[in-house]
Amino acid sequence: MKELKVQYQKVLSDYLLNQNESNLYIGQNLVRQLMKSNVSPEDLVSIHKQSLEYIVPDLPDSVLNSFDFLIEVMVDFGLMLKEHQSLLLKQEEIRIEMEIAAKIQNLLLETKIPKPNGLDIGMVSVPVRKMNGDYVHFMHDDGKYFSVAVTDVVGKGVPAALCMSMVKYGLDTLEYANNNPSYVLEVLNRIIEKSVDDSMFVSMFYGRYDLEKDIFTFGSAGHEPALYYNSKQQTFTDLDSNGLLLGVLPEMKYSQTDIHLSENDFIIMITDGVTEFRKMDNFDSRTYIKELAKSLNHLSAQEMCEKIFEYLNKLQDFLLEDDFTIVTIKKY
Amino acid sequence: MRDHPTVNIVTELDIVAARRLSRYLAKEIGFGVVDQARIATATSELAKNIYLYATMGEIIVEKLEKDGRKGIAITAIDNGPGISDPRKILEDNYTTSNSQGVGLPGVKRLMDSIQINSELGKGTVIRIEKWLE
Image (tube, rainbow over all chains, first blue to last red; front, side, top):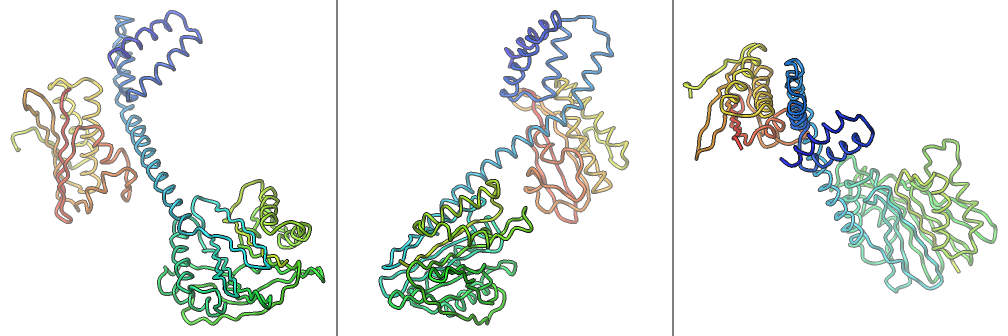
């Protein structure tokens, strides 16, 4: 500290002799060092005053008094700076905590994509923030069924992530892949309605695939409709049902529908983060995705998901506004 | 305690008197100009809190001496509404209804120590200390 004071005096006296850029530059570098040693603004003014008194004796009182005045008003700036620094530290702590939480969430919600006979399955799920509010749950117990749940918590970040853990455990308790979609949605609706805050809602698309008969049975709770592509007719059908979001009313009934899949047919399940483009009001994203998917049909399910994500991400200038999840099932 | 110089805080002008008293004693004890400014600012803040939230109270300034070290203590006493959570009020970002100025976290930073005793509905006693290096 004392050494820095001496240095300040030297740099100041150099500048008073020669007002050039190089002395200013040296001065600024010195102040950075002073800041590192926790010298506050009011300390600096005081150092300046003392240095000046030393370099220029016989300064008029008005000049010296003005520095005392400046010290006084700088005290508040000094406090602001300290507060700022302490908030930065706190922010760093929170950041680290968030990172750990996100890691735990990833571990909790990790899903392995199953490989049932006759189906090619792909998936991309990208959170907009650290914690994902989308979740995909697969079940394939080597029996004749394979099932998939695509969920989206209304809301983002930590609250959504906490809610999602519960959805995951709700799905885990169902254990087997052979349950009816309407039954699964009814059970989850009851769990969520009971245990989650009134402002939390979850949308879910649930599908069960009969691997022997190639029948896909699906139900939806307020979820973005899935897309079904019939390759023979080259047409798309929206897979939707008018079920209410999970967690709104306790005794909801959910309907389910069967479709039959033939070779090269595919189903694309998405969350609303895939179709909502807030900056492009008149953009028909579903039509765009249909055209895109059709042109990518020669690729594997995983490659299709990745390509669609790539195109849509680029379309939004790489600024996703919502968690983005897409799951593709292809019959081969 | 009553032997120590005291300023009654009733009007805004009394805040200035409290500042003057604490700065005067700080200088006498041997604090430098910067620390004088810090001590006066901290005193000012305590006095202002009394004026704004308790309407009436007093500021007591003491010289301290312990183990050959010198210091200053300022105690603010009021019979105002009290503070519900003294720990919370020392956290940065804790804003009360119409907080202005540096607040208690700031006061804590300007001094070496702060002690808050408060009872809801009865009043608050805040004591701050600063020691010469």
